[in-house]
Amino acid sequence: MKRNDLSRSLVAFDQNSTLVSVVELGLKSWLVGGLVPGVNRQPLKKQKPDPDSLLALLARWRDEAIKAGHTINRVVVAFEAGYDGFWLARWLRARGIEVYVIHPTSIPVSREQRRAKTDRLDTALLMRAVLGWLRGEPKHCNMVAIPTLAEEDARRPSRERETLVRDQTRIVNRVKATLVRFGVRNFNVKLRQAAASLEKLQGPEGEPLPPNTLAELRRDLARLRMIREQIKVIETARRQRFRALRAKGLIPCCTCWPGLWESG
Image 1 (cartoon, one colour):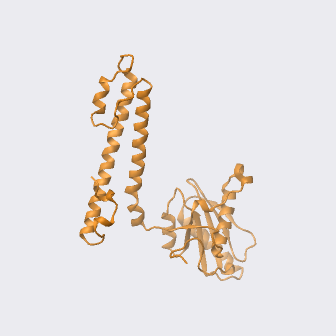
Image 2 (cartoon, helix red, strand yellow):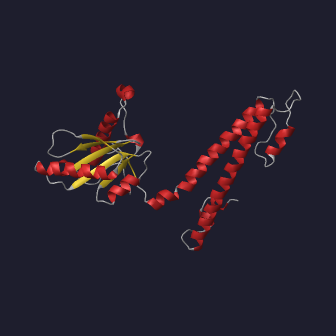
Image 3 (cartoon, rainbow, N blue to C red):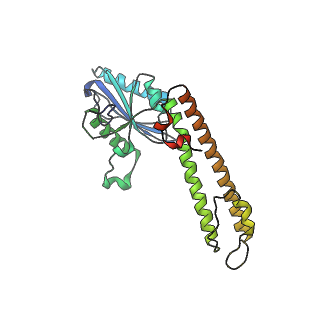
């Protein structure tokens, strides 16, 4: 058995004493579905995106189960990983709710329902996936490890750098494509003095670049310069954090780490 295996639940599932709820998260509203012991219907409630309202709804469903003669020992809430991140999971856990975040690739989509994708159908699929996972069915559904606030924040510099590198590549390719349209193929966009060299560029016809194209290229190179500066700031801060941790003995010698940390 793998350590921290999130492909199936390792806790026995008693449906008669467990309140299960799934949430389809949206920017303007949340659709909450429930499986309440002792209640024949499967309640579905659309509410504003407010965690306190969700907690109140869970308490109401729990009271309904108790009135139906069931003792609720476990309250499980699950939702799909997405735009909202993990803040709701941490908020609910801090209030004693058992929370799981479903990996998006774990939710099967029926081919017959491709054109009828609605929050109601999504909620039913989420509930089916969660129930299979709670029953311990292997490879039925995968959950995502919920990071702490510090762990989530520690990921931001690397993710921001990845975005900036993609933007840098996109701008370089766009500038090259613009120049090729005017017959210029041997211009090095990555040079520090690239912006100053634009004025001297001439195409095969011996004419300089047109004014509107020249202005567009200047703006693109200005964006490229700003992106490079931001990447440099991120990498410098990352090296400083690495050296500080190594000085405290929290990180082994640099030979154990990729050269990226000490590059530059």
